[in-house]
View (cartoon, rainbow, N blue to C red):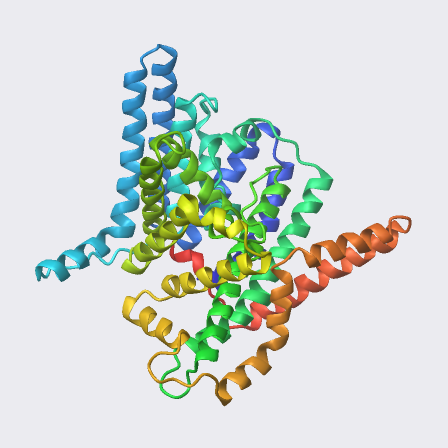
Length: 473
């Protein structure tokens, strides 16, 4: 699906850009809306109806909220907001969590209720959160109601970030939906950002992902402690470059059409605490939960006990949002426990420790967290963790580990460096040194992006391995 979707995007995008830029200003949102529906229908033809339903429902709810707010009937407005939340969460719950709930009931009570085996609509976790933010923003008067259903539909279905975010809150692009200016510089920045994201996804995430896939299925004498840690390192890089790469592509595409989407990653692996890691990872999701769940629960403006309760609820919800499986529930509880611990007492202690200790602590917590995240089976995840800590009589290191390390060392070094700001600083330094020779700087940039594009496209066409981890969310 991912393989064909990216190839389809390369054929689809030039047509959309041509139609978009030749269309009159009043029709540009219509072009975006219709082309987004075509893009979605290509992958999920049946569930286009579900997206149209969400569009109509939340457009109508937004109009009603605005109507009652203007009349001073806040009670009715709150009921409309609640109605929007219930409908959106019901849709998400039905399609994403029905089989999980049925399976859990069958396991606990020994029943044999048949599973529904519903296909998960692509991107439903992202666009339902976006549409829910709309009615809340209108109620809070943080955004004006969108009276043009085509423009609202363009927001809901916007194909650049439809599949995997970033989660764009309505208030972030409310003005740009009505008035935006497409510029040559913005289009150029968009192309550059898209190429960076494409390189991250195809050249980095896919290559290191094959290492993880080969390690996670090892058994017996093949798996060693060292190999298990190498596997976690590979998965950590795969999910980072995979997801941040897609976010870069989405932000770049948005810039081509005149939108400014929010950043979604900020070098999370340089963090010195778990709390900091989650301020840098999937920023748009963290922002959404803070604005629409944590703060409404009371946030930090309450007793310590209630703050702990609020954090526990948010992290349980975060785990459940990621998937219909008990490992995601445990994953949310796991991170919630560390963040609560840092808030209550350990955060102050941590800041007094050397920076390298803070960094090692964070990476260790994240490493074990990725194991919980990666294995849908709690039994398999626990078995892997046992290997990581040397239980079960496994060797610390063996020949297989050295073979895997040596054959992937170049990719690992590249990704270690790519997880920091060093490449960006080096590029800025080079551009600064060439400020008096702008043509050389421009040529170097052009060559770099063209090479990335050609090599990535070659990999994309020839490769059979091209997963995208966040499609399942």
